[in-house]
Length: 199
Image (cartoon, rainbow, N blue to C red; front, side, top):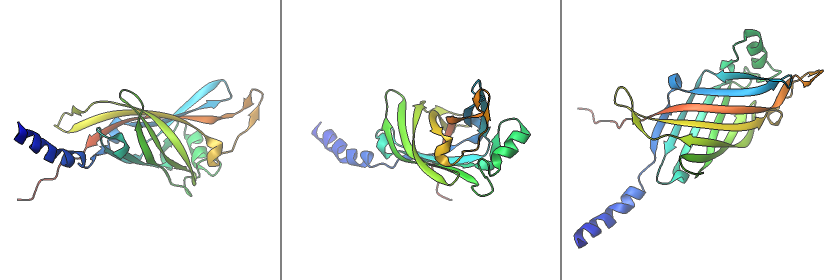
């Protein structure tokens, strides 16, 4: 028994120092969406269709986890071509000048069972502001080809004016476009497979 305890004591520091595992966003099973009020009375929803992201996950110590996501601003899609063209233009995203939207985490903390609070820097339209994502996690599962997958659902709200997106028009009901944007992410991650030595 003493030998077993001694062996466990020797291995424990190695386990504690193990590097977080790397996971990549699977865009074919993910969605980066948003919603904003239109004419005060309704909600317009859209998404960005081109993006990539990498997460470093440590289930034993969430503080050692991190995430980075890059979104192509020009991939905005609200299912109305003329509106999307306007959203890509200088009145809004100015995608030619600011082609990417990025999020880089600065802190990851537990927030209850299967929940995380992920604080990070969101850079949009050339402006960087801190935001907090409310994240719900899933357990690991095996995919159809033996790969390991996890799901994460995240949400936050931002003020578009904070990022210099101030274009608007007043109508009888009030502003044509709301200031608050609800951001929702449904992301499926695939775990990096260990590299095997070449034979």
